[in-house]
Length: 384
Image (cartoon, rainbow, N blue to C red; front, side, top):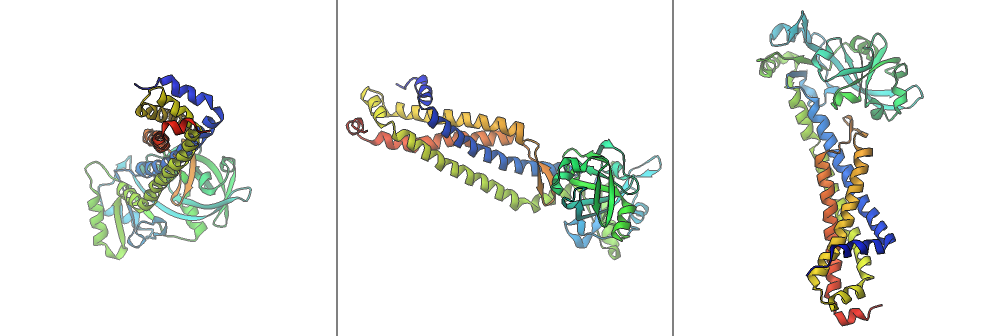
């Protein structure tokens, strides 16, 4: 026969201070799990939504995955469009975006700032970068820039410093912010965009970093790759944009593996913390446990009741952490080497966090409960 369900619930209420401390400890551990899993899911989401299946990137073969280190000739877009017929062309406008992309020191009006990602673009860029939407202000004119919604996070500056009308300073020039854009969580959201010609003048460069081309239905990136292989003098490589960001997923795989390892370490630390708290809780109830055995309750029933208390506390801690994570952590922007992205507390993060919490409740309660039940009843009844 099992102990009544209400018995375990009342026991938690009898020791409010100890129950509250245990709840806070469990909630803290689960919150750390939510932070790390949210980081992993946010990074994966940012990279997965950045690519476009119909876009091909052409850049220097010597730069490998680092496009900001790429340098190609300014005539490359014209060569590509003249040699390849698979690019989308509407109303006489070819959907090709020549871009100059690099990391540079950016300062805000209050003198703060850091390493920012700046992209020189043309009016045709939104036709190729179809996820980019101007949400406020106007497209940049001469001496102007538009900023992504996470650009302030990338620079470590407050959002007010990136408001329309404010000024940024980079490459020895001052630039007025004319607008803000979003890209559905893509990597572009941490960038600053300006006119290509202005950026080339400011950097004293006439070359490009890459050319992005929107392919028409039925066209294959293999044709662009063949052109790049045939023109060995240009030293170009072509890759589908989704494949490029998939390679970045592999590039950041060690980071993700390390993050999952941190989840395991945090969970293990939580188990030991739970053991410590539960040992203290059970140590003060030795006479109570012996009395229950003297009244005829089997050890299995008492064990189930003690585990029930641990699981109830863990479930409450998981729910508390989950509510805080969804309301405060979800969507919080964080800086990273590739730019910035938002923490993502999705269904996967919720399942992992709550599962870890419930596991802590079981594993934290089981060893001390088994140890208490192994003692002789007569000896335990005399315990102080």
